[in-house]
Image (cartoon, rainbow, N blue to C red; front, side, top):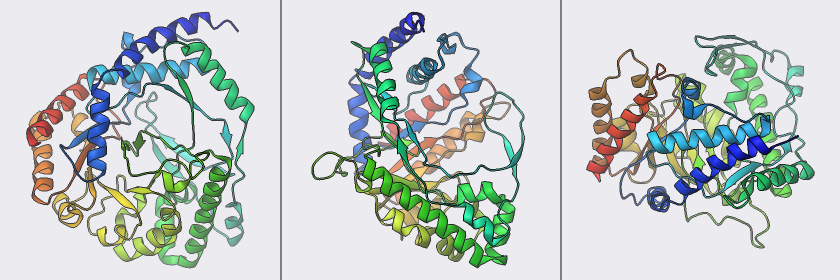
Length: 413
């Protein structure tokens, strides 16, 4: 296939990206992320991720021109990074190279969820899901098996060679390893449905314990194989949408040949446990996953689930460094319980960008409240705007949010 057209498109974008990645502000932001992650914060850090990019597709600078699907993926990534850099960067960092995904297979489970979906916008990946329960009998548990991870080295090299031909002389390229996370309850909620799974905690606790045991065994085997095959990513810039830069992780094992779990971040979550008691949270989430958390150098825990009232259990996680404070958490309680020992990873409410009119005064009030609480309790804090399902096709709202919040965090430092 003739790649000349696509190559020209990508090289123009790569040249622009390389100039932005060479900006000294990237090094300064890395330094500030490292300070935050070491709990010696100089100022609150801000990131924006999980953007509703479908609502940007009508913009000329976001129109993809590449014809080849593999190359179009690079184009889309470059256009999104450049657009964000120009319009709502916050504390984003542009890496001075292009990552190429390794050809890794077998990391997932051998069966898929069964579901019905409803959507308010067909172009948006955010949908409402109703899952069919596939776990009723003891025999159903046998579907949860250990993974068999494979790495197609020839395909990885082919991908790398393609990228090198495209970006040669502009940006170096490097293979990207596997980034793991502990999400026992994400797959279970999709295999059973959230309501069915919650009822089963009460009605069939032994069954759920066995299911969790098998899922954890799957993950432990996955990590063993990833380590053995040298497939883990040792320099991921993000951990669950937040800056992962740190000097505290060694990076590779003694001979420098492989990245091990102890060299990297891990993140965990149990979003459907927002409604369970702290005791049940400990029994079905924290205790079973301790062998996984123990293997990693640093841990980020939480997502959209409010963790106030469960911090005693969360703090049992070994190597815990960052804790999510969701829009539905009681911030004052979280700040008091986290103090200066952990990074207060605040998730501002993305719904504030989805109303018919964006209330800038409310954004300022919410942000000031977070900063004041963290200052009072000496919490190192980051503000992570994510799960942005819509801005009502008004991309400028993200620019305004970024301008407001960056102004406030600079005033706070």
